[in-house]
Image 1 (cartoon, helix red, strand yellow):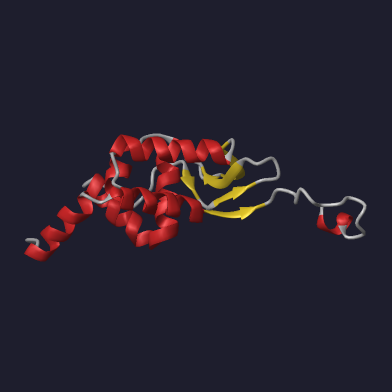
Image 2 (cartoon, rainbow, N blue to C red):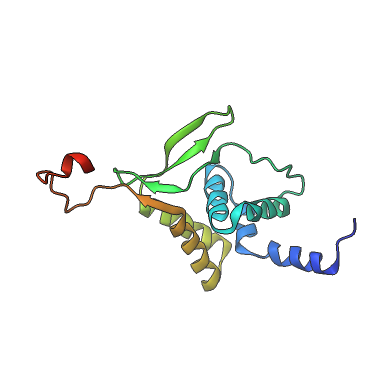
Length: 153
């Protein structure tokens, strides 16, 4: 089936987007993180569209490992997520980044490598920030002598 001019223009514009450029230029475990960030922000259809443009042979199945949850900061300050492995198992709270700083640096490195403009860079970082949906660290002002301490810990 021949693509209409509109579809061709849309595909051309999408290929120039930071999302497609980023996925096309990232390999390994960080690609799974990037796909999860995009899926969290743009719904699953966005990931399918991006992967179809990056890999015309994409069959709809994400290659493992696949992130099954958004990022969460655990009590140690590590950023963790649930990961689906190639054997079908699910690893809960697998460490993705050792710190917020490491995550920031990886996304900054990607933005620099892609030479993103300020608008795209800001959008990338907002998406990454929204991807971390929970902070499980203890409150630094938490008083263990508080009667609620046992219940909250």
